[in-house]
Image (cartoon, rainbow, N blue to C red; front, side):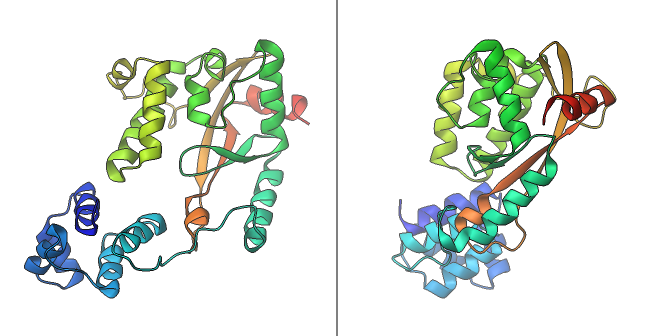
Length: 261
């Protein structure tokens, strides 16, 4: 896929016309059309301006620049490397401070990169009940897998439908081959069409969808928040998400305090 095709794909994913983007970037719509069709070669400066107006992620900005033969604008640093030590330290503080409640660090494709002691203990209790989990670090695949979280989820249909709609929304906003492969994998584990047809409106007055888990003779109800770094100038750092779980009732709060050490 050449630069113009990538640019058009990213523009359409944001539901912008060529005229809309041209006005934002202060270029002629004719010139933008020529870039998208490959009749004109955009400069490095022009592509960075278009990326800024499209509010592209670090990864998509790099993808656009690399397709035109330019150097990437943002680094892509492995989380385990020395330059990322301050990031790891910050993540470790956030995870540790959330004990005895579970918390995990996720990448852009919902793979677990780090987990606190409470999350590890929770998974350990699940495996004591039903045996080892499948060999995957992907939290959504584990939700869908019959040997993962699925048997423990009392409201699995609601949770799976919610996550599936989110994945589809993310894929439409930013087409991603890895997310596409994840959706294909989920289709092997569940009837995705049936899940997408479920009524997304809430059936109770709670302000959030609670994750309901039956474990060790206890019904646990929790909800989660997703946090990210606000000043990231690196592909990996920008894509990191920290998910913190919170009790949705007093019984769940007491269980975590007494059971998870």
